[in-house]
Length: 249
Image 1 (tube, rainbow, N blue to C red):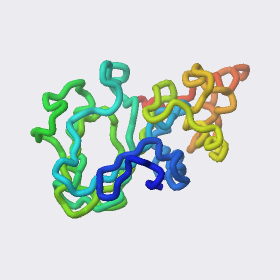
Image 2 (image 1 turned 180 degrees about the vertical axis):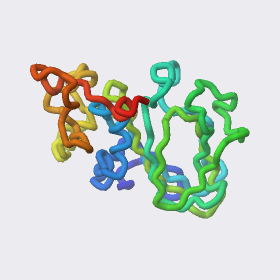
Image 3 (image 1 turned 60 degrees about the vertical axis):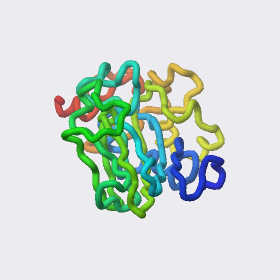
Image 4 (image 1 turned 90 degrees about the vertical axis):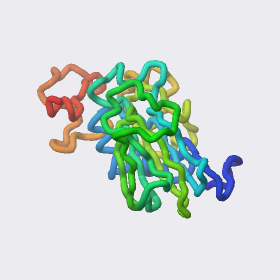
């Protein structure tokens, strides 16, 4: 997997985007049943894979990251959506991170509601921050607008983890423009839709009819919300309620 990447060097930090196209093991993460429902509940029929990443952080006191939120910089996502995230990130932690200074992710709880942090672009410790110590096999889910950083890895363990981020289809993807048609041809229907590799740009806002429904309603098994539209309205024109709407969020 890594031998084809000229930037990979054994024992050095390595980060790679768009890993779902790299290996079939990662491809399965596009619509993996362990996590895809969390994203679908928020983004519904316009669900898109925003980014897929792998990080390898070997020991080294300069191997860290500064305070930042993911997503847009000039006009943060929170401007457009103050209640629900416009991007969520699923994390899979592949090594035990049992104590601090192991390349831990550090987050500021509640900071997804603020557009600025005084420590932005620094690695300073901030009052109220939370340093995540996670066992191997943990899955995390976060609002990508939360402010976070990465601790140096001063241990003897190489930290390895995967991130899979989702957003609405009309947001620009983070790690690709379009996917290879040859690779797309091997995907199942749901994976193909979630990748949103459209040739016509407006399909990102109004996907084609064949992309509806992405999933059937898990509770009632239907392809649309009953009694909401008149029968003459075609299926792909029907806006389906996302979970927060059903719960009167």
